Length: 383
Ligand SMILES: [Fe+2]
Image (cartoon, rainbow, N blue to C red; front, top):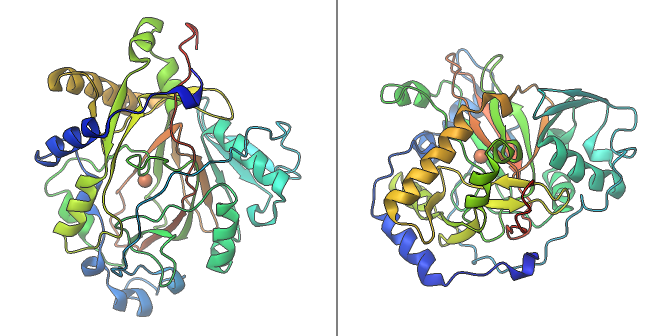
């Protein structure tokens, strides 16, 4: 089915499902449980350092929560830069070295500067990342660029997503920050209650046009730990039997941002944009590679449209377990100073790992270009 022909479900289906789940306590582990906010950010520790830890390396990237409101997103025509890119990657990898991280997902690239790519190189970047799913670029100057310049590079791929609830550098709401202050104890507190910190998700899938090629770069981090897990959702899809894939074809699910917004308000934080829920196909087709991938995640997917609750829960629980247990299509990406990780949010899920104990600051910035509305093409038996 052509993208334009994928039906749009009546909005009352979306609202009913979102409202239903809004009233329920979610059983699945929520990443909001250890989200940071103005109250948990120790600016003294960040600007001056602590007994054990130096000041933040990039104080221009410290998070602030201001309560300016942003309007709802309007639909826009997304451009897929990977679609006509040169698959020899001669502009992107000119002089660079590529190492695969695993047999199924991930690569590390050294010897090139993302900030120096021409437009052909950026197009190739979109395709290279779509194929490898997640790529760690080492020794980049990204964090040292003026924030406007970094944003300009990312916005080649699509208009920035402004996160509804996260902290942002002063004056730059388009930059999403992942930040845990030096000497922060949230992780230890969290493990009083839970046995692990894994929260598989793709970013902000509740949006009508969720992000595609996504950039995350390290500013400060622990010497060991704080890696990020990624899963290849195209392999996760392919691993299922043809009969099961056929059954999934055509199903759609509600993705909701209401709970994230409610959690932000509950911890005294902000909500920049009214929360939304949207219906997306649970199998989506990548516009550059034509690959199909599972597109559900326990953070934001709530309900399969047209199934009864128990049926929807059973099917989603199976898919979540399949994704979480598929270590043979996971990669664990390690961070270093200067690392920029670029992933394709349409064909991956990821999870933070909260495993460092020494109170090191962890500070990253994400630039989040939005992409096309998810669509699914016809099931062809062997796809
Ligand atoms: Fe994320």
